Length: 124
Image (cartoon, rainbow, N blue to C red; front, top):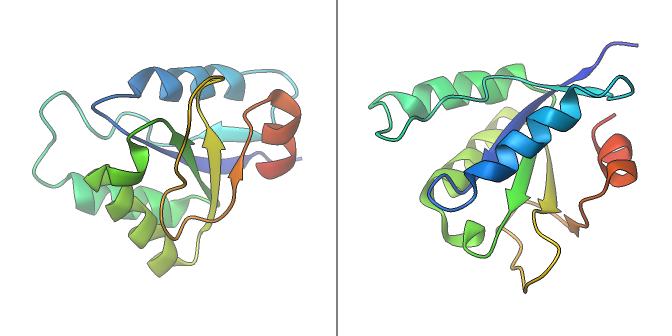
């Protein structure tokens, strides 16, 4: 079975570690997904990151939003959600941490708990 191509959207300023955790999970033998273009933004974002992100999102089958405390306000995440909507790409939101109060990203659908069974179902 081919793995689903997933673009990970996250709050670059606060939640970079979440992206690394998802990349690690994508390498599990039974993972139904692979992460594409997971290093678009560096510490100083490239001026054309939006163009690169839009292209990567268009090549993906799912945009996975890793939600932290401030993700719903992160401008890059909001732009990526709009890109996914424009491209007709499925969006899934997952809470990135065990503790806390999390606000869903606007226009990105339902918020799910992050566990391996949920990821396998949502990203397959």
